[in-house]
Length: 572
Image (cartoon, rainbow, N blue to C red; front, side, top):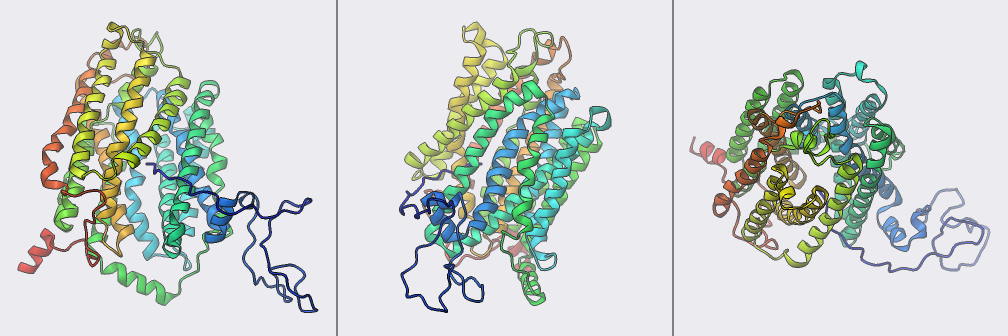
């Protein structure tokens, strides 16, 4: 997910710097010196700081960053650099493309690869329970830092194992476990630092857009840099090397964390008790958090322990049904309907990525008629083009579509994206060669349009989920709704794996596997058409409102008001 932000300008001039120094100082009014005047500005005679905190280099060298550090504190900016720019921006963009090549080195079949990929992303659906535990069970009074430290330790150890342990010492199931812990590190750090900068923005709302610009501009820049680098690294050094290189930026977060750059103050027993009492009052939300955790944990264990694609598909569908019913019964009707719409749409977009990976990257001896994309083209070139045009999509959305109604925009983008997805069907059936269009040009052209439209479809989803979070429950509610959406991606992967198996599309990088791609275009056609079924539900499940309209009243603080569960309990 990305968000668009525009720098608001560099309003203040650069602080004067001494010709022989590279540190910055704050301007002070001239005062008459006497015996009690501090010789070092900002210090008292007792050596206690009484002035504003000095902004270190490089923040002080750029006026806009200097102003931002003065408003929010340089410690927060360093913490966000570690958690958002490096951890969420660079690391996943650098190691993500290596994951499929790592599975391919174990000769994992396409359907099984999809199940593994879905499992590794499940920690992003565990955000609600992570937030609930950190709020209810502070460690020595601290809610965030200890949990970031624990998750980072497991994630860094997992990455180190992937980078250094040979194949014969690390089974593919253990690889999945290491990837799971790495993603748990990323999701935990993202959630807990997001909560911190949201808190800071509430105390200084007029500089909030600047802080969001700092976060997302840095995140996208770091991700783009990683995408440019990963192709050559994979091509020349292998699929394990990105995990080794990414260890340093991932471990960087330990430095500001150990120095309490989150600026957490330990809570007293009375404060902890009060917080627990407040959370206990939201029993329905707590129930959904626990239920989602049980569902994701079930899918994780089954996916690692059992090779049966059919079993994992049935488990995914069961979890989807339980979540759909539970959220629809417990939440207020408007929130329940929107959540159901996006869960259904995401789950019906069956993934075929496991087989299409081999389709694009198999060598001539493996798939004679394939595109034979190199590692650099498949990762760096396609990834860079996708990143750039994702930003174009966000900019055009902000410019032209932010006033559209939800229903109109979702209808238009779904129809257009489905039409563009037919280009994948043409590619997988090799019709583009009959039309005389080379594979590389065809894929690049299709990616450009698909990424722009995908952002147009994604942005109103983010807006409406944000609008449906009652006051006082914003963090919990958004984590639940977004977690449900992330769970839908794993359900789509597991169901798509079964479809691939039915179609006989189970390549694994073996020689002469041309026959495994014969029906792959049918899988692409199914994943294109099935999500369109949800368009018939638009008038019933999505509010007839503009994206700029308020969906909940200011006094709406209850996410369960008018729910089926509340109505049933009132009748009892």
